[in-house]
Image 1: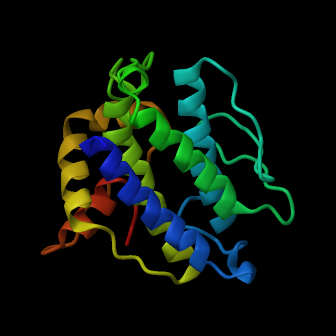
Image 2: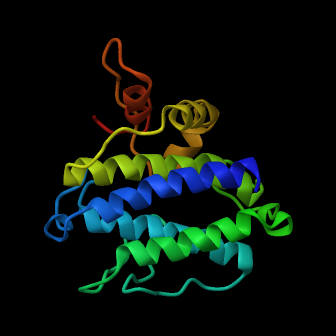
Amino acid sequence: MSDIANRYAHLAEGFLARIRATPDHLWDAKSPCQYWTARDVVAHVINGHRGILAVVHGTPPTAAHGVGVSPMADAPAVAPGADLAAAFTACRDDMLAMLRDPALASRRLPGGPLGPVPVEQAADVVGALELLGHTWDLARATGGDEVLDAEAVARTHQALLPHHAALLATGAFDASVSAPPGADAQTAFLCFTGRQP
């Protein structure tokens, strides 16, 4: 498996662990993402995965496991009793299969904050941002484990620095906030993404 696929698998496992650790009564908890609940955060990540896979495969995304489809930056509707862990696992497995296939992984996306880059590069940078940020969002909303992988945080933060203006231009990312003096790497990264840890 490629290094990118390995990195993706590790971050996806961290997100899935937070999904599985969320008690049923906390799915409606308010998240750090404005207007979104914990449930919405997970649905958004699932929807984003489906959107990327749809572009790579040339097929429209479809609803499954009780999670609907919406524009990429939004959070789709979630049916009562939806299995969010199963929905994310299916997307993760499809993403890993794509990243392990050299022909698919090298397909260029038509655009985005990084420009027209191979999908594996987008997954390794913007995908890592999404998984790290929303893992923290879900944990913060539900009182879960907020500690992120330190190496992934540092690598992703560094990779994103040249693309900050392009990220903001998408309208899907909040402006950075000032990190407190002496902030650790995770706090600095979260502040860079517009979060207030």
